[in-house]
Image (cartoon, rainbow, N blue to C red; front, top):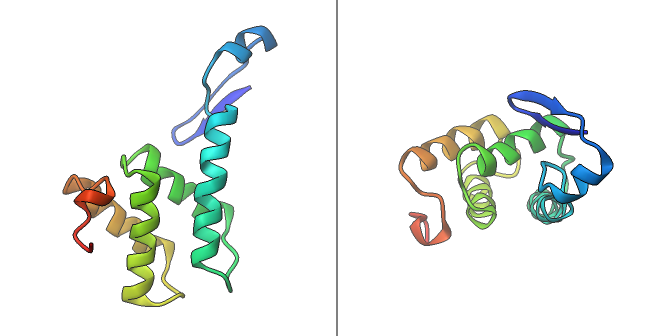
Length: 112
């Protein structure tokens, strides 16, 4: 089964067909997101991150087009600005703003 949560869709593939596809849950993407989510957890050492917050973080990469490195820099920047209790809604707003300004890579980030 290959599915996405935003927008919600799913597709049932045969095992043979699925092994040739680079779907939403391929090994490469799972590893990339595991590292990304580990980075987010490291930035919030005293706070647990909800599945909804991880979904927002994934949107910064998949929908807004930020690189993983840029998204982690964005989170770090928001923590610097608002403290470790910063809401993911605030970070999401900043991520949308960065994407609208085509700030999608570390080299384009205004805080370096």
